[in-house]
Each structure stands twice: as structure tokens, then as C-alpha cells.
Image (cartoon, rainbow, N blue to C red):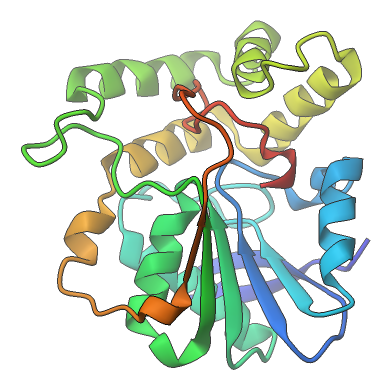
Length: 248
């Protein structure tokens, strides 16, 4: 397993790893609460990373508020969270990279590309979304009162096995009988965030809006590739759509 290093984004320490030594770089922005160390216990994750290393250095990091990075109270600023990408690239001496992002991480990738276009070779966005909470121009989002109830639920129950088992079943609907994977998921989520940190994370991703941040941004059409892996998934209690984030 690669060693863990820390970049500084303002006063926040961001844990990151560098895998490989190829001449090109890939920055991997994962989409859920994560813990880098326990991610390496999953063969799917290891396989995906090692497949990239012949052609690129892979830069992984725990986003602020999760895993080994500093936990902060306010995660609503996309601009502050986006700057964590810049801090990791600077610390790893990466002048430019392909940026691949999953789920809510796509918002950080978009804003980073708009802010630092010279540092982005390409964008790969997997199951991206711009906003989760309902608004005047986003009528299909979740109602604010439902978001408040969900945050309160996460704050009360995060870490409880029954609560995390339910989120596991929503995230891995095709593997609900895999006891080993379920146990890994429970421990991975517990290591990824405390109850207060998980509630702050969920509050932040639900209220953030890249539509507002990027409304005046200019993007290069040559940057983009999109992937949509599964249709019709709902938002799980962890704040991510129901997909398997062991490789996200």
C-alpha cells in the first residue's frame, strides 16, 4: 500500500496517496464518504488502480471531512472543497492531469476545470449531478424538510450496524447476501466519518449547487467524457446514489 501524505488546503490537512510513477497523471475524485486505507482491502479497488499505473500516476485523496483528512464543520462551500484538488496536485508536483470524478465529486471536478483550465487534460465524470436539493430551477430534487430529517437521522444513527446494513443493501442491491462485503462496508463507513462528520458531509453535499458556481464558467468541449452505470437508483442514507462505491 502506498504511504499516506498530507497536502495543506488553507488550514485543512488533506490525506492523499500517489500510486505509480508514469509520466501522465490521473486525479481520482471519489464520490462518497471514504477511507483510503480500508479501500485497499477491496480487490475491485486494487484492480482498478493497478490497471491505471502502467500509463499514469494515480492521485487519490480523502476529501475534507472524511477518512484521514481533517474533519471540518462546514462542507457547503464547493470552492473550498475544490481547492483540495489543487492542494493535492501541488503537493504531488502534478502540473496537469486527467481528472476523473464520481457522483458528487463531479461538481468539484467541474469547478476545478473552470478555475484551473490549464491543469486539466480531460474530464471523466461518472454518474454526475449538479444539485440534490429542490429549488426553483431544480424541481425534481429532494425537499428541504426531507434533507433536514435525513441529516438528523444520520447524526443519530451513523455507525449503528443496522443503519449501515440498510445503506449497504441500497448501495449493493445485487450483493446483499455477501456477508464479507457487508462487514467491510460497515467498517469502511465507520472509519470514513464519525456521526457528526457524516451529518456535516450529508448536509454539505445536499445543499451545494454547482449550477450556481459554474453558471458563468467556460468549458472546453474536448475535455468531457460521461458514464452512467446504472439507472433508477435512489439516494442512500449515506448521501450517495445506490451504487457500489468500493471503487468510487
